[in-house]
Length: 389
Image 1 (cartoon, one colour):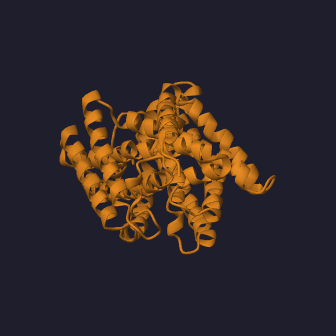
Image 2 (cartoon, one colour):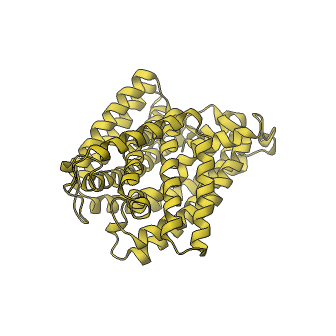
Image 3 (cartoon, helix red, strand yellow):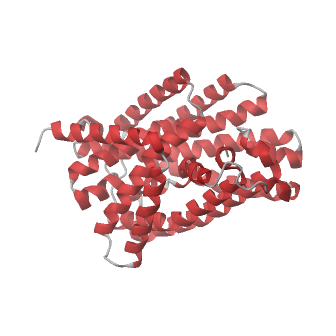
């Protein structure tokens, strides 16, 4: 609901190429994580895969990258909902922040009750919201104009890579699902099926929304924090703001809820393996509720909120920080897959393609690579000082 605008700001209409490339390379990445999750179901997700492939010590940085990226990522997701509601109310950034905090609080509450309830809440909203997005694009598309796609690359072709850096936030959920693989009754059958269905749905939604946003809004697509509201206004007038505000709250809640669930379970698994204090391991078994790990995530979220306010970090910055960490996680997962999956198989070559793709995304992260580097060093120090036995 905000990424098409951020990408358009970075690369103009050429941002559509960034969307297309990311979605194409999401296929091998998604398939690889589904295969790994089906074969090695565990709350540790990618950290577990890396531990099996390269040893426990090298798995710790992977776990830290995801665990400490979650608070920043969910804050960004919650602020998206806040921006849309604030726009509908005609309010400013302060209102958007408070609404975002309310979305975070609701997601923490649902996860505190238990992961099974979280899944039911999401199941009841995903279908309705997907239909709403499709309706939005269908009613807004007739207002599109070919002239809005020219010049196609106003900031040069390298800007496509810059746009891909922030857009990776949208296609980096495959490793989050791997942390919940142990919750499936039959991971080998259900996880690949769920992954394939998700990939098909989000590919249609993301690419269609990106094309419609550029076609209808043109240069204005990169100047608004609420592009979906602008699309609906072209068809329904000012009333479109209210509709998108409600949709934004639910969409933000779904994304935040999923990442908190995966992050909390990962924290418990990391504690079990000695990469975090062992007290956080409670509730990490399949069917349990890792409330202590979830509480740590809540504290980290509060720190992220204060840090963003003090340093004036907006959505673009928050999403790029998250993308850098998650790209590092995905890259490590692809490397582990090359050792864990059958050699020279279709899945193995898919993992190789995924490794090259995520490494390229990392390269476009620039100075933000320092964040996963520092977190990785901290994780290695934590594991090295942990008691044995």
